[in-house]
Amino acid sequence: MALSPLQVVSSLEVPEHKLQPQSRPLSQRHPVAIVGGSAAGLYTAALLARDGVSVQVYEGSQTLDPASRALIVTHRMRELLGEAAEASIVNEIRRFELFTDGRAASVELNQPDLIIERATLVKSLAAMARSAGAQINFGRKFQGLRPGPGGMSMEFTRVADGTREDVAADTVVGGDGSTSRVAHSAGWPPQETVPLIQAIVPLPKDMSPDTVRVWFVPQDTPYFYWLIPESKTHGALGLIGVSGAETRQHLENFMHKRNFEPVGFQGARIPVYRRWTPVRRKFGAGEIYLVGDAAGQVKVTTVGGIVTGFRGALGVAKSILTKKQSPELRSLRRELNTHLLLRKSLHHFQQADYSRLVDLLNDSARRSLGQYSRDDAMSVLWHICKSQPRLVLMGLRGLLTRGRAARQDVSR
Image 1 (cartoon, rainbow, N blue to C red):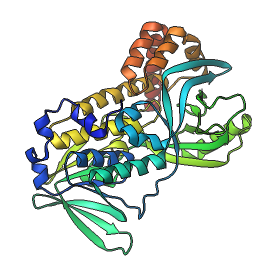
Image 2 (image 1 turned 30 degrees about the vertical axis):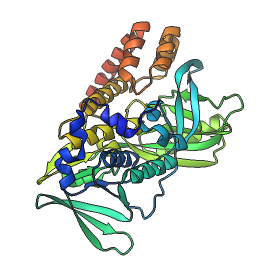
Image 3 (image 1 turned 120 degrees about the vertical axis):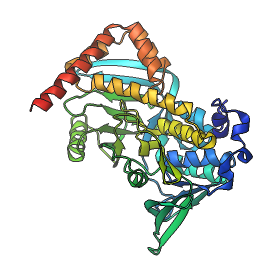
Image 4 (image 1 turned 90 degrees about the horizontal axis):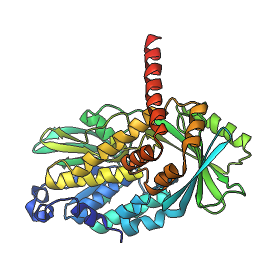
């Protein structure tokens, strides 16, 4: 049975008395202010509001109209959101097919991955937050922070008439994306981002709608191409690149070679995880937290940030409630650092390396990939290394290659 967000937070080893509103000074202070109606920001609002905290969400757009984009996530999202996840799920995936240089491998999943529609997910989370008691204020563009008596003052511009609005706060949560103005105002350094571009295309006739296809083409991208079915007839074909113009050209060339005809395009800038971003800072007499893309909580192997953003929201909510660092944040940090290690080992792979990788995926290694999801990277890494030790040597060679490449860049 899926747990509700409140049940999930309450299960994170928090003593019962510390989760009661009357035991917290929060209930006697200004509402917690969440800047940005992102998925992670709205989930944080729902978690806090369900535990009795007064929450105000400030969103720059005048209506809740998030950009549409097809995304693939693990079944972990269902465990975190419960019923709120269901409306956004448009398909379930039970198999991955990997291709490189004429070679192929197939991985069967023990539990299905989920194809979700981002805009629907955000609207469901907004409804969850409102139902819990959070208030969402639209048309408020965040301008900056300054210390104030007993806390801090946030400055907004009202979109409707351009007037200024000052809001007092003791606790502010930045859920305003990879270019977070909250993070900038509080002194966090800017994040590196990469372009994600995908085209909506008809599915090939030989492709099952419960299957994702992945192509490794390192001359185009250090990541991969993907085709994720969002229905029985169409899917999202995309890649992550380095520069936007080149990435779009690579995608168009890929589609031309394989006879894909696009019916639409989607895109975004995604933060690249380089190191853990501390999610809390003191600001005057107040506290500022970051969640989701604003904190760079993205798996750098796949540049997926929905589930990791929710885990960041769980950790921040618990930290606000208990005034202690959450174990969930420590666990998330280990997870993201494991993905970083994997990305470092793969980032300079050439076509021959990917061909050898696919060749080395024996039955046992494929079973491990199917049993453990990419939101449990440590288990995936451990069991694959046990089932195919030669993959460890490939990973080490990748890390050494990366080191040589870095030294060559410095020498130039």
